[in-house]
Length: 346
Length: 282
Image 1 (cartoon, each protein chain N blue to C red):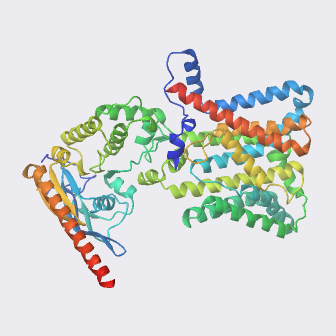
Image 2: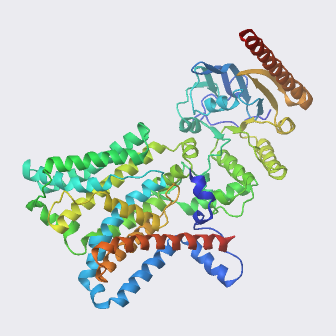
Image 3: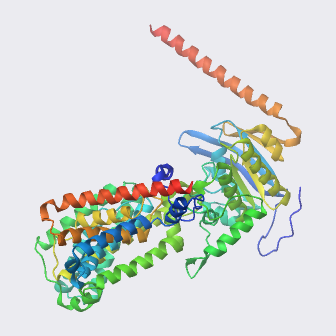
């Protein structure tokens, strides 16, 4: 599986490779090659500068920046963290956005209908994510379904569950949870700060712990990893549970942020944004390679586009055309630069 | 045969058993449904010995190795390590007991560095974080000691040649304090230069005498060069067991040519029968 990514030149990019020959261009490309995240970093900076200079007063305002980073970027980043782990070990989760939808409803039911205090209800919402992740793992790892299908199925079930139990009506955020919710999502910068904290934590988990190493090994060479005694099934279960739990967290945060629990929130869009952010950031769709920092920057790139195009006054209807083109362009830049890097190194 | 350094009683109750064998397989059979992959295999490996396992494709060599390394259980039979019967439920368990394997399909992870591969699944950690510096240093020392030359332990395995990768896989197994090393075609798909590097590595390990090895080989010349003893596996049975000095490439060739000849006759006979059958039908 990873063989394909391995052999294509654009996918060969890694830290630790030897720097290129003596020419200054090659040296510069060699430096670029050390950090896979650098391309997406450059794209993010260019976009931020463009919108910042062109639409100075509106784009750089405090409210707009907190909107961009907290409301738009943070949910993408947090779900992308989970998707990076899953993509690296060779799986994907399409259902994360539906856990997002249902988790705040579960909290609402537990507090308002069953009289639970806020904290246990919030934790139950997050645990529900973990259970969905476990179920995705069970179907994928134990029953042997492809995760694309597994999570498509669980996604539909969760959507149906949300619509049936809520009768497709929005609900108010339970009053007792609002205080906690301020810290976790409602205050202007809290979502982004939490996203940064999670990025740092999971950056370390991926690059500096056995779990991260074994996740890469599972996606890079599953048979080899298993022969080395790594429990690849357990790695996948764990990463499914991580992704769904993060999906639940984002759902709760968003409910507090917009101060309503909406059955039409979540769904496929945040999940696809997250996968896009991961891939723009340099995570291979076929497993074995990926970076958390790249996904973080990918999330910033997407959010800057969404927010910036709005600020620029691109009207709602053609917005998606521009957005789609922008994703493709940044991806082409990514692939091209990676190819140059590989050339620079050899 | 080299004498084993006196083991501390705490770690190895009864060391090598009465015959001085570190590993013995007794009456091992393996079936996959109706297919008989192995039948009543009896195999022994002396302390410090290098045993060559030869045989046609599909004779059951890899199946036998997979059983000895705990990857799959035998249908029946016993495995005895240092005089004690053991049941291997997993590769992990076998490795913990000191039986380590280097696979044909190379269990290295392309995306990881050399030193991470060498420490795969027995990483050193401090407060749950990987101790990369310590692993890097040890990996370099270990590779230097057994004479494996690679540009850098920080290189990604994907960037190394087949021989270098094989050497790292062997080094990984050796340095995990293995008592018994199982090598599945250590010279497969390798040029003369790289192959000779691996042969040297195996000979060096033999001289150091701490590890006993079973090698699956295809090239009889190479097998006789490094092995102390040769076992030939045919149709799931060991049909030949001689010291390397008592046999020759010629003898091994003759046995295999005989096997080919019989297979050819068998096929001609079947085709003959089919043709007769068709003629009768028409």
